[in-house]
Amino acid sequence: MNLCVIPARGGSKRIPRKNIKPFAGKPMIAYAIEAATDSRLFSRIIVSTDDPEVKEVSQRYGAEAPFLRPAELSDDHTPTVPVIAHAIRTLGQTGQSFEYVCCIYPCVPFLKGKDLVMALHLLKKGQADYSISVTEYPSPIQRALKMDAQGCIHPRYPEFELIRTQDLEPNYHDAGQFYWGTSKTWQKNSRLHSSAVGCVIPRHRAVDIDEDQDWELAENLRQILI
Image (cartoon, rainbow, N blue to C red; front, side, top):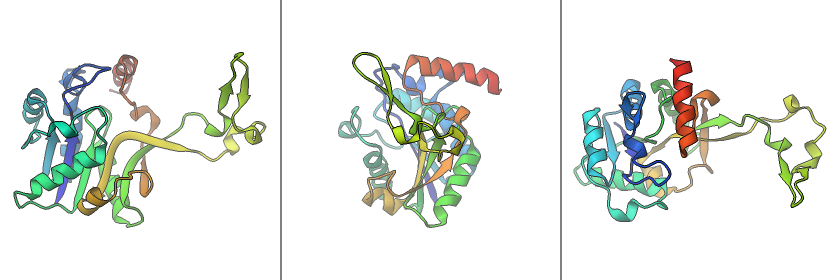
C-alpha cells in the first residue's frame, strides 16, 4: 500500500493562512489533495496539521486528518523528513504499514497526478532512496554574476564567460512539490537531495509560492494555462 502525507501547518508568516487561502475558487490545499486522488496511487491520503481549521478543510476535500501534529513538529524550523516520519509512526501504531510514502506540499496548484506516477516509477528502478520533483534553472548557473560594493558586476565563474549558453550543462533545483520514498527511508535518511532521482517538472508548472508576488504570479499563470 502507498501513503500520501500532505504537511500543512496552520501558521504562515509571509502569506497568512496560505495552505487554505482561496486560490481560483478553492482552498490552496485542495489542489494537492486532488492531484493525489487523480494519481490513483494511494490507499490513504492524509494531512498532517496542527490546525483544526486546516483539518476541517482537508477533510471536506477528501483527505483524512486522523491526528493533530504535535507542537514540537509544527514550528518554522521543522524539516520535512521528521514530519513524514511522525505520520508513518503514528499510523503504524494502529497496525497500518505502507511500502511507499509520498510527501506532497500543500501549495502545488499545477501538480498533476501523472507527475506522481512518473516519480514513483523512477523510484522503483532502485537507483536512489528518494524520488523528488525538480525543474531546470531558467538561465545557466555557470553564467551567474556577482556584484561588488561599487555596483560593478563580475562573472562568478570566469571560466564560463565566453562559452555559449547552449553549450553549458543544464542544472536543476528542487521544485518543492513532492518527495517519494519507502517507509524505511523516511525513518532513517534525513537527506532528501543527496540520494535522490529527479522527476523533471516543466518550469511553468513549478511555481514556488512563498511571497505575495508568487501568489499573484501563480494566479496569472493559471488564467493562461486553463
